Length: 215
Length: 326
Image (tube, rainbow over all chains, first blue to last red; front, side, top):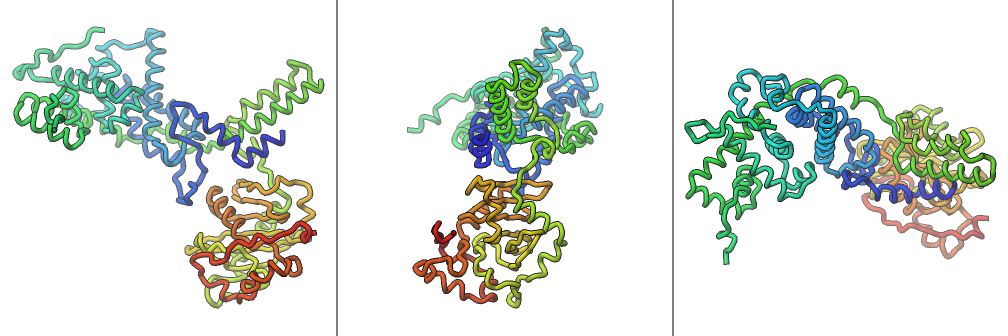
């Protein structure tokens, strides 16, 4: 009993346990509560998360069918982040960590919904619902892009929306989506080209315009 | 040979060009390609427009108020036990449970054993930290905290104020204070404090902004306190009821460092103080061979000691012999 406590006081167990951090949180290590080793006043973990909260909600809104589901997803992501806060360190890439967590939760939820046969049809997710916040005017102008994005496979859609909305580096985006950079670039290329063809005006050769993917 | 210039431009290159993610020379190669291929240039333009339209659609989310349930989630204090601490204490609990099972106090599968094992998994819950793990501090640290609580914060600084004319309460002890000038802290006051039956020396330091850090040193006659515990020379950083303190034992003497700083910063100061401390070389304790080089420092005046000293010029004096301590 005494040995673990003594080692704990000296940081031995702490270091050993930190070394076994979850793979998805690699790069995020334990941190002092109110500052770092250099004495630089640090921001609270919750405050750092709050900085990314609007972006998280935006990306979740683009992934999910409706706004409530998107906020549920963000809430689940925040709960998981708080549970794993001991793996965070100030120098870690918090945005990558949060977005990766959000995306994986989304995939998990989607897989569970498939099992429950709750995946909505393409038409149900088409732009006419209340999932995205744009005004009627903007939707009238940009709705075709949304329709085209909805027809994309899930992996391509996630990659395209991530790059369009958050503009991370390819390396960071690949880390978030859990794929190699080459795979990310390939998905992006296919997604962009599909959307371009679907949104092209007929007079400009958009022979695929107004087609929807049949699931 | 500029072979890179001859590489064909792929669809992925066009997308990366639209994203602005190409290296400079690759971007130049693609730009040259686009000048000769207007169809590809239109594709790149379409990709850029896609991004702009998607952002226009979703950027309004950024201006929406955050739902209250998410806001509450971030405001709720979550004083969970750090994983290392929880696992360490969990291991201790498991050790106890295993020992008890071996001794036959508890039979296999009994409720007591199960509860001891369960605690290993339940330490990471949302109970306040004070309830989950009561920070253990020494009786000396408790006396220090009690003395600090009894005396208003303002009174701590009245013993001496930083400046050329400051008067230090007890000069003989000022020379024994560790020099923390290299960390931006200078000695502001030295005082003898007493709490109950315990007396100790208080060294107060202040930084350029006036923030206060206090170092407490147990009196030699109080070393009997130390007999019981003695996890030795390890630094012990504790958040005790919101007060951050670091305590350690050096050469049989207990020290406590308290300040309104993070535990990491206090630990860094403590490490420096421990290395820079001239050690308890009271009159008559040091041998003549060791006392000689220390003499100039002992004769320094109070004013000179309180002058800002940007860097420590004194080497740590690690002079001690167990025989002398007796």
